[in-house]
Length: 418
Image 1 (cartoon, rainbow, N blue to C red):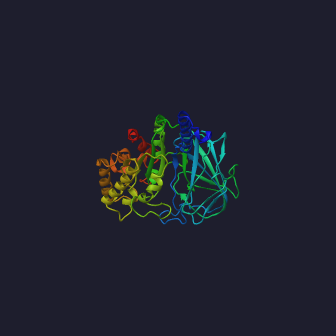
Image 2 (cartoon, one colour; image 1 turned 60 degrees about the vertical axis):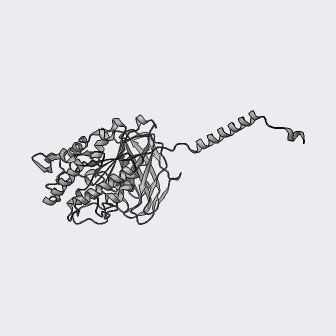
């Protein structure tokens, strides 16, 4: 046997070598498993079909615009802030793939002016251009733009091709500015048109500054119809009840996203423009898939019982139970809200009122959800409980005004979200 064959590595060296290899392997594994960003949904406007023709009950309804080589500018107010953000667009109801030419996001000061140095290009897989297939969303790359709670940002979207009326959020209670032909993402323009809706823009997420539990609050999805969407409130003022709730929850570092869609129903097929899918059909898309969501607060059902023939209260309650079951399965807490008064509106009749009262009694007495809010009691007229207080209705006796929405938001016990 040769000297070479007789040589052996000392045991202590073998142990040291094994420890070194383990440390290297652990380090590589740790690097590979670095924690991903914890995104939080901070603002939302659920996608819905375009309105191509004015309905008979609303002949003056604005139609979804047909865009070609134009820039759309939209301003949103975030609920929660963060060190970075990302933007979600949708071509869910488009007939053709949607080509994005450029996107630019700018943080705005309190006076609405651009904050110096706070304009950033938005990219998609590293490219300034993006292509959204039909029926699909597109999420941007992270943008290194820090924002505080209740910050406003301006998003400029240039669409270079021909884009027929596509995915929109009809009753945005916010103005979108449409440019003359050309890319105006980095320069001002005199609008060729304005529309009170969201176009292709559906969500903004933020990455919180820290992962510390004490700085991470609840993420609340407010689901509903036009009353959650803020119809009747002041245009471009952020006076919907979810907006006011977001303001009240700021000490808790909370985020609130408004997933209301005007005309929406819990049960009925609401796929017709511009009302979107029924609540049960869009529940996973608009609530369960929202990054970081922890709570659902739901105000929906008045369209179900207001349009005759209506489902029975038992059928509507079964729909609420589906929301509760599906939310609880994902670890969300659920808060249900009573239906607000409708006397004086086109919805009112004795049958509708009787069903509204039956449903509200169930909401207040059930123990299946994690809480309830009595919006009905907050804004009903003590002299005529079937109608909204006169000073809190917007003119149609169905939708509250700014005061009504603030009163609703202030009726919510914030302990429900602790």
